[in-house]
Length: 191
Image (cartoon, rainbow, N blue to C red; front, top):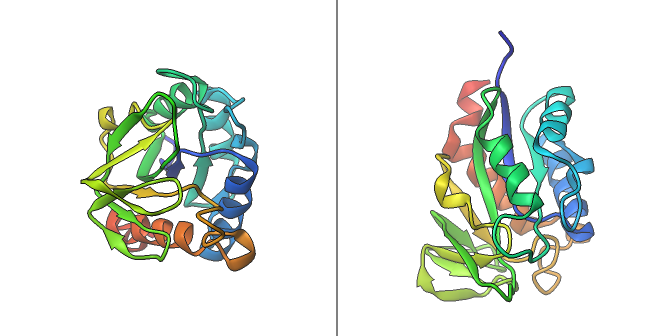
């Protein structure tokens, strides 16, 4: 029987997100599936599972993106497949806000604004707190409420947020979200 791989799912996959996620993975001693980058996602769920299993160690950070496609696009199909796979333990999800024409939304447990402050409110793509508590709008978040995961953290656009999350500055908002997921999921106690 194979060991379940511990992963963090990220609902963004553009080039900025890739640079941010790769940087944060190195900082925390994890791995990033760089090939999961795409806007929209290009890899299928089974292809991503294979890459996760090939990763040298956990936690493994994986990107998914629908690129604004209505309903369940390629990114969400792959995300659901990975999140419910028997060999995967999802530590948490980083739900990324977007200015979607279709206004898909999901519940979040907590958000981190562009200044790195935890807030019960959702945030917009710029990382500015919204008016609703525990809700985020995005384009790859529609299926998140169906998943049983320890924590969902809302953030603005990964690698951007008016340069507050630039990889050149260490992607501090994304890093804080990953660290929060690792802490709340009990990852450090399970090593």
